[in-house]
Amino acid sequence: MKYRSCALLVAAALAVTGCTADAKPVVHSTTSALEGKGPITFVTGKDSSGVLQGLLDKWNAEHADEKVTLVELPAQADGQRQQLIQNAQTKSASYGVVALDVVWTAEFAANGWVDELPQSEFQLSQMIPSLVAGVKYFDKMYAAPWGGGTGLLYFRTDLLAKAGVQPPKTWAELTVACDKVLKLPEAKGVDCYGGQFNKYEGLTVNASEAINSAGGSVVGPDGKPNLATSEAKRGLDFLVQGFASGHIPKAAITWDEEGGRRAFQEGKLLFHRNWSYVYTLANRTDGSSKVAGKFGVAPIPGLDGPGKGTIGANNLAISKYTKNKATALAFIQWMTGQPTAKQLMVQSSQSPSYTALYDDPELVKQFAFLPMLKAGLVNAAP
Image 1 (cartoon, helix red, strand yellow):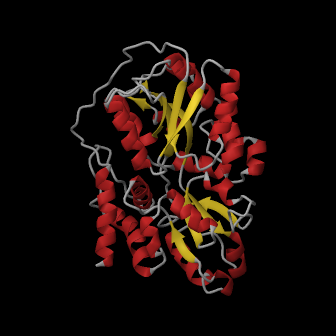
Image 2: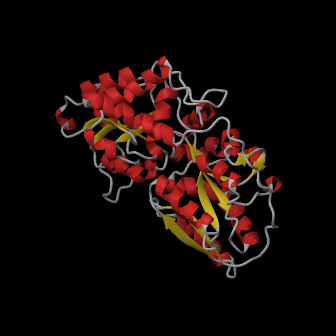
Image 3: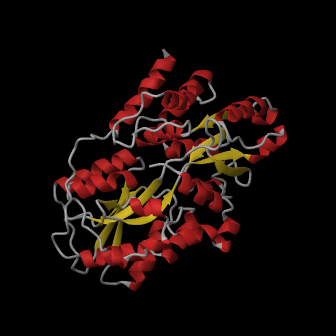
């Protein structure tokens, strides 16, 4: 019964974000010029890094008549999307620049909820192509790449070293590593593996990564569902059997990104799948993390070798119904520019959109996983 429940949960999450192959998209062109200067709001998910207000203070100090006010939405992606849609449907002017998950950009463009942006005014050629593709809808640009990444495997270096175990490249190696490491007295109270398995967008990401990492795909080249394959089943089996065997703790069925991050930082997980932002938070030495200096980062494992991560990105768009759109455009250009992208990487380990920053000696010295993350993004699947 446990096996069946987990399988149904994963399938339901995938169905929630399914596509209709025969639906005809509607392309909304820019109907009004991006004009008007003055105060705007910047609407994004909860800032767990705590660095955004500092950036806005810097902008506001230089733009006294065009100040930006931060509006934080819920931490979970589903809650953010719901509030953004409600605001758009009421044609409210209260939201100015909005942060969109990569999977929402086409939806907001098709519904005419965001304005088209001028491609020539952004340095798209200097950005990772997969991230640029995520801001376009029928070759028109409706958002600017703000930061992107893919799934990473965080692991406890101290416990692996104690057991003489290397970071796993496959799911089988992960299981063997857990069985060996968790026998150590030092590993008392530590569980094997965790990701994002609550019934929300994060589960869809984790399920997609598992399917893609087993050689399958959620959607085929024809745009139709492609889940009735042996590869898809093998991928989902990794998650289902993980819960059935206890290698994934029962509590993880309620985890989102923050729930899993807290468990890892509290020293309760040996392996944890999450995004790059966790790196800085888990390394804090203010007492908030019990694993600071005791963890490493590797590509997510797969069936026969390193897995195929999901492309994750946050894009910045202009609400169709806001005023002061010239200010909104200028703020997006500043917020997505290379200097700000580098500052965000240094302060919060938010993965940058610019290709060159993944090879920046200063950043690589501080974040040794950057070249690996760059390769992962090239290999990642939408």
